[in-house]
Length: 187
Image (cartoon, rainbow, N blue to C red):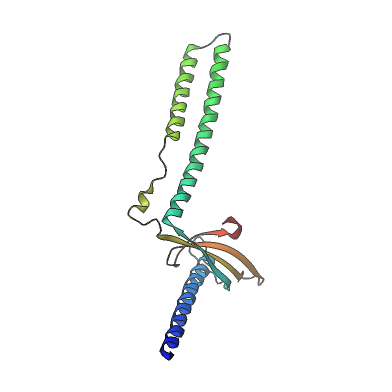
């Protein structure tokens, strides 16, 4: 019985130290990211993590879904833009044909432009879904990034006033690299 309780205590200690270790990796990564500008210059902002919470793991399947959504959004924007161009060209053609002295050369040019624009629209509509080759051979359940919510304080040099922020950081699966930072409301 004593051996079982010792094993249970050791297991709890190991799990809690692993959790604390992961938290400290997240904290160091986020602190370095927050205190380093776009040019790679580190500024000591007296960063202090007030709370760190791993909110979600992003898997290959999640990433593919996000890529698909972004692809569809961009494709739809392009189709809308090309449709506006097509409507404009059709209006020009109609105006040219109803003009007192319709120009045959202008009609031909407008018809070519209309055909090319319609071809682009059709091509966009038939564009295949996202290219998943970047995940070729990887399991759909494999974690590709981790979202960590961090509430932290920092002090700007020369100002002296401490400020607090809460941001979501998208980290590499090992927690050692910040891939992106977003305001908490964005996720």
